[in-house]
Image 1 (cartoon, rainbow, N blue to C red):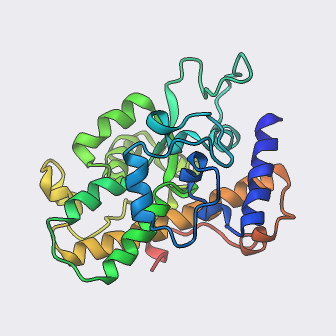
Image 2 (tube, one colour):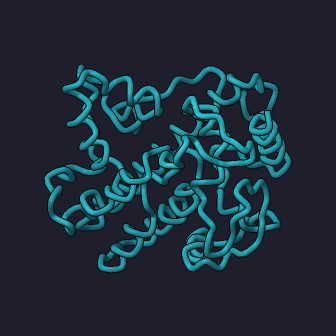
Length: 275
């Protein structure tokens, strides 16, 4: 019940601040006042990475801040609702999804990896706007998932935190077992796969998977690849986030919120359906 109360309260705060829940930046958890509209989202994420967000902010669940701040741990009650295990936390204030706290909220696509790499590339000003959007989207609900902690820790080296590469690895593992589509459906990952017979994984840009095994080749190599990546990742985060919020609203019978009107008739789209 506590989790449901938090979710409803968060929805109410979203409506009050005129922010759609799938566009809510969970860095707000470490800022007491609403994030100013004119605040650069790139500056904000760099402040977050520098551990400068030291307040217990709006809708903060974990009571963390500063050095301990971790955005993808804040929507715990959404994870619990959508992807809970049979584990019942004791004491009830414990924010664990499993007995040993091995399954945790994690961020799917990393902003900082691509942003730092982009400094080695030459690109035009319109790409900065896409980076600004990604700096916010990175910590929106559609870019969060639950994973075993050891898996998330291990995936950086081979994937550089590009989620399409992680998905490709998972496809190679799950598809022969006959459970790939169930995995995609459970975690609402359709925006990262094609609606073909096998639900194959879609690359962020052509030839991306050819870079697997080569640390530097996994990052965008030119302005075109960078622009394509930012465009695709922003769309996929939003698409998945809308579907997650729709499922939460329907599970908790919270369809009375104004933002639900935008969600009520939608179905989640596959990668090949996204432009």
